[in-house]
Length: 633
Image 1 (tube, one colour):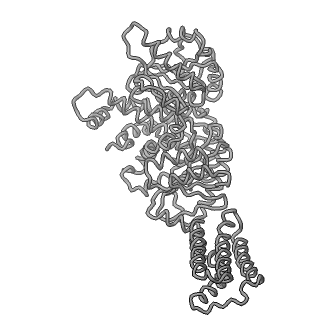
Image 2 (cartoon, one colour):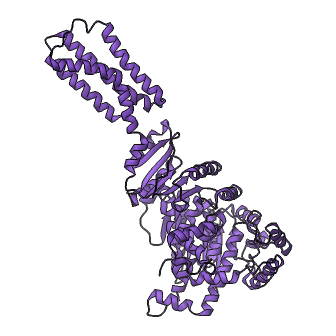
Image 3 (cartoon, helix red, strand yellow):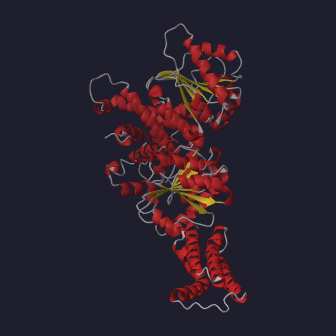
């Protein structure tokens, strides 16, 4: 539009200059001005029509029509009658105007086609290796884009499905160097580029439908390469059935990464606090609130806090705590394996699988303080209710409570959920209270995507295959990506499990380093520690217990022997687990794992297959590869 405006202004200026030179002849002066203004209007007609969404052919024909009408009006009005432009300059100008009126719009349309959006995009993308493509132009996608742009301005951002009522969002998108596409424009993959697609929408059901359409489109493009394209879908934990259907269709051909926003925020916060949580084997943790983030924090800690000889209790305080516990028991009956009432009150039961405590009263009541006084001082407190003001007040109240005690103790660190950025800025820096959860934090690329953890998850998955692919972690990137794809890493089940295990490896590293009382290099100490067979076995046992806890939290169950046999018959002995029914035979205590392997091997043998199970060996392989998984070597 700007280019055409400049051309129109130049035409008018040229006409004014020529008109001034003919100022003594009113008729010729009027002729020059009229033709110049008519030509300028004709030049602007095309881009105005395009910007209003007119079809290209209609825009071209309409622009030509403007030119013809302008010439016709001037001729029919008799303005050209009797005018003699004998001087060469004016004769050229006269015929030039006639030619432009007829061919100008056509030339203009050809010019704008040469500067079409695709051509402009290609120019902008020169030298850019990584592109981030957002399916929607909305506040969430803009927040993620800003975090990417602020960290690396060379990465290009593309926003799709722009509509005319999103002008303010479009301006913000352009400010971070974004390319904004309408709903009719599709992204074409270019060679030697890495793409990250983001399917993000408040309607999670729509996200998965749109992801299906996107995968179909990607697989049709000749430049598609699975190792260079990631599709990130923002989903809800309740969408697992649709997610599994999507995996079945595209899991082996597209790297699909599923992101639960609240769980991602919880993982990020738990990563930031791993030194507190992993360095002390006897600890309690308090969680206040029943928000999605509070629940995610509570559930993730169930498997993260499994340490050798550890004794920990996770407490959840909220007036809705009983509903939280009831929901957890329905989803994960092996987590809350006792009657629900056993998890409320003061008594701990040794037969409980996990030491979890629920306190179901309004935390604003005075009984809250009485209850807290009776409990062991925690190492970390998460305050994650719905209301910012209440969260802030509760954090300050808890700090004062522990500061008022006479006994010598270290105040617990309080991590407080505050969504209002203004409230965050107003608060003074407090060494015992840390704040998280504002919009910028929630929709930050590092928070949601956890790129470092994602790379660790890939290396961890590969380390599982060490016996099948020797020296797998030293292979080329393209070969590793091929193995990742072939072995099902890009499925919801394996990807989410690998991310959880990768975070646990970070916790294990903190735990190992907490044992370093020697004056030697940290890496050397880790190698020395893991060279001890007993240490290796201890951590391998914890890894299996951690995996079992995670699988239970994801809704998986241990099948009976007869169920395993039916699964094996269904798959001709190739599998003994069922991803659709969420059944896995290895979800047992470590002491029962060897017996489970014998049972599974007997099933494989009945189908004429060699031993396939190596559950115990896998746990050892993971621990042995900690340094490689965390990219320390």
